Amino acid sequence: MPLTVRVAYGTSQKTTTLHRGEFSILCGRNPAAYEAAGLSYDTKFDLDLPFTTEWTAVSHVHGMSIYNRPS
Image (cartoon, rainbow, N blue to C red; front, side, top):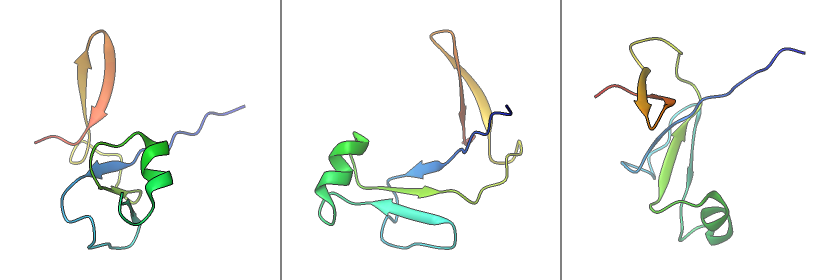
């Protein structure tokens, strides 16, 4: 069975301005979702990013490979 992974970029910037493919979890609007997600800040997620080196890079932290947006 093939494995499918969905990667979302998350940011605490401009969480109330949403574009296609984005959603936000805001403490004031949905405290239960905020707590369930274990967030420390209101966060906007983007599910519509291409998986390319322009948007992703690999960081190695404590022996784990973590994919993140390069700065």
